[in-house]
Length: 123
Image 1 (cartoon, helix red, strand yellow):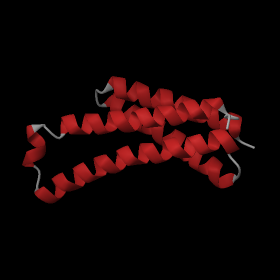
Image 2 (cartoon, helix red, strand yellow):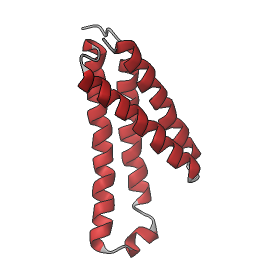
Image 3 (cartoon, helix red, strand yellow):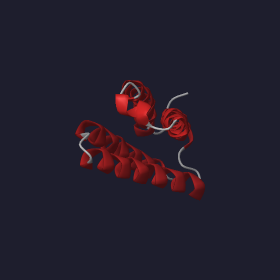
Image 4 (cartoon, one colour):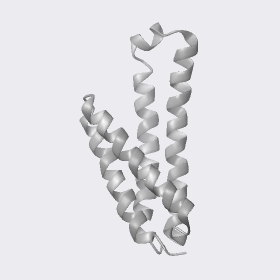
């Protein structure tokens, strides 16, 4: 099956890469001594939330791949795409502002892909 919306295929791949990178970054950050100073419940929540974020990127990648085949079919698809775009730009701005400029720029770039791909695929 060929993609009707190749920008959304690129967006799907980008989200897959974000998920892998997010997981790797978490594994590295979990080694930080200050994390072990948190209460066990908070430390567990931080780790679980981090992995939830990684799985979220995978889910969004699959959704974007589906949209690459079907387009954005209704207002729910358009709302989800809009929320994803907003989340990518907001998270990117936060990472950039707090000193992780590469992550901030990467999330913003994927936000552009998300926005343009969704706009072109909106029916």
